[in-house]
Image (cartoon, rainbow, N blue to C red; front, side, top):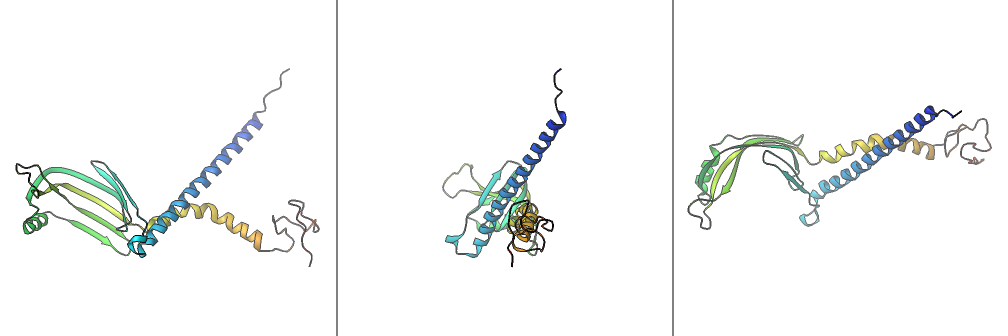
Length: 214
């Protein structure tokens, strides 16, 4: 008579494998988050050094309607930038500075910046220097309003703190427990593994450590 498969054991092995994979995944994500936090923290702290010693960070991801930008040089990270394309409005030539200033002032700009929270919100026009007119000589560029943009930026210094939350949540508890077991001696317990030695005071049955007698 064939033996019946042990479904309970198979289910137990599967659960152990899933738990192990989940633990490895969480610790792997914590390690990656910790490395990013260290890297961004070092780059942010390097802003205090002379320019030749600063760590450059510049990540730009552009699409026609939105973009993402990370620029450590300005201490801001633009997390959201939405572009609204409008029919272009052609302004004066770029060499006419007074006319260019008047052209830019006619568009409404809303800008909010909170220094305490390092948050910036900007709503305003997209003004570029364009060419393509009948006269294409050098310097024949014109100010052109091609659309509007809305972006929100968060201070660069917050991101190392955000990326350090996961490593703290994963590793802080085990680190505290390991420190207590390693450096805090509780009478009646093994100093190596924390096993209760009241029944076997001469030798730890869990790890084999022999307690030092004073």
